[in-house]
Length: 264
Length: 345
Image (cartoon, one colour):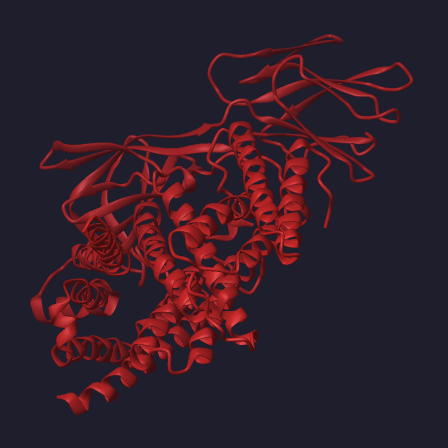
């Protein structure tokens, strides 16, 4: 773990501070201030991302540092969409997620610029990784609502926001097509780059496992509806756990050598 | 049929859970063993049962037949599995046995510069098989990102990187001095006459190098040559280790397809840009040099089942987007319009 004494590092820390301040303000029932701080954090993260893009001369999605930078960037727009468009509450959880996903970029992964290796020079590189990042944040936010649903004793439902079980479903329903698209684009890219649309690589298999967990969630919910809300929530949390393994453990552990090892 | 619905749904859930567990298990095996595992007979039976289960679901559930998005999703999954089985090695072996097809499943093709080749070393045996056409390698070359980088390491673990351009300077701190790149050579040569040594860029050839000066804190200056192709070459008494590196941008093989002594297709292939001809894809796999010159190694892959799989992907994707995004959006818009109408009335 190391502090980054660079402009990029400063921008990341400012973003994290704004997201954490937004979380504290919202938790202290200063909702308006929390929303403003969340929006300010997003603006700083946008500057940070564009700076990285210009500095590296390619879309910053190449390694885990850039991937976490991107995850921090997309939290606010998705949270805004879920609040305004879907009447989903619990924005304080989104603010916390946004701060947490920036932590690895700020303190764990090195930020040294690298040239794109031949395998990443494809038009599929940006859409494949970008849709996965969006999907992961949708699923993380769904997982947070599922955890709140499990933890909250008070089940009173406001007219203005959806119950957390329903909110979890809505977020997964938005993220699932992106998860599917990421898997399919990765498969097409694998065919163009290496000759196999499915190479049985550990990352591919974990990605398939995460897709299947959510496919299972939809079938379970079709069978039982809202009869067992806690089990519905456990599905969503299990899906998130598999995504975390796919994103981090598979790339960092020596247990899973494969074609995606450059992502470290 | 109604009584079958519940068991079918449970069977579907169990099949999904089983595949998720098998995927996790396969991830621990590594790609090669996982491929063998997922192509084994017991798992092939599972794939078959999975397709039957999906088909039975479509027959049993009226909703799956009448809601187009759900139908597309489930048909898409069926096509992906069938296409995968058709294009797999056991699938190709069965086609060879029962349909008499003689297609190459997968193999490698080493080709020397300036020569043609039609023999493919099969991936799963020591045999070779011939293609009905030849591939000619006009030239193989590597393109690098410009400029490269000079890496400077001190013995106490500090490190610096600077672009390999003339005039670039790096201050290393009071105890180590300053490093300056004086010249960049594409093909370094040194002429020695008596005590005089003259470094210069010779035409032709490829021996990239940097001329670097190190101004030490005591005022003395040392001159060093750092070579791209000899990264580990350095003086052990030096307080600094210098390395010159260039990242590869492209591995390029200029290929021609020759059939009946005529060039029928040509392409400069590189990673992500394979050559496609007569049902085969040709990929840049490796390269090397022997006593006869440069050679490239291509991976040859048949496209069996590929169209079925891609059709499945398209149906799955359209179905999922339609179902999870399109339908809710359409109903939300309808809801808004009806609210507006009610408001106007």
